[in-house]
Image (cartoon, rainbow, N blue to C red):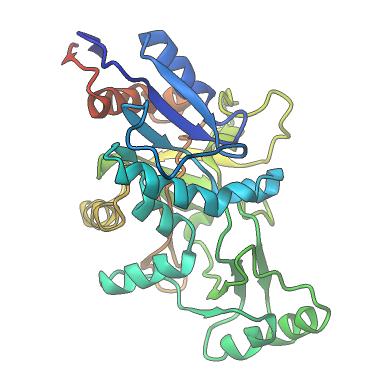
Length: 330
């Protein structure tokens, strides 16, 4: 664990809008007595004429799911502010380039294609009326996924072309806050789970298998209720009264090939910290990447799931980036 040799004159800024997800991060910063400030992404302002910043480091924890909490105004504003802060020369964790990928599942697929990596076949649409034709040539069931999502929001599954056509005619197909969506094959999950690989500093940190609750697309690991063997998890990043989702998790060990591919994705997206998700299609046994999640709030009760606290390593990383550190001690 690092010790603090000397303090940089400026605090770290934690920019976020969710009231609970980052309590473990704040607790670890407090424990180390590392100076930081919390910035509310839902009620923020900046001056384009300023020539310096009061922060040693900005940690971008803005979420594309902010609109679910009445904070839609933060979604695109964040991109403007990150570009401003970067112009001032302030280092940013998950900066504007990374956040741009966070805001577009379509752009993520474009990147995966450019890297030659597998992903479930998809089309991109900007009008619900295009959905049925866009699904031609895809295997049903298909998902219509809002381009800007988060926490499983804006995803609907259709088993047949007729079912999709009925929802289009009823005006029930949602494209999301930017009017863009994917129509994508919904692959059957081998063993009923997806795998989320967390990275830090462009390197593998840990992996978990996530077993979603029946009918749910919320795969947020901080919302997990129990391990696959029934051990109840302490959900330190959730509100005390948050409903339990039925989400189950277990530690996973991806192959060396998949870890290398994940690290390639992290580097290509300038992802400083985040999770990259893949599934194994039960029809062919092959893995397919489908999401780059720059808002990593880590798995609930991590020590019981993966054997260590990732927030400790995350704060190690932040302290070094901010110039607060340090020496590593056992």
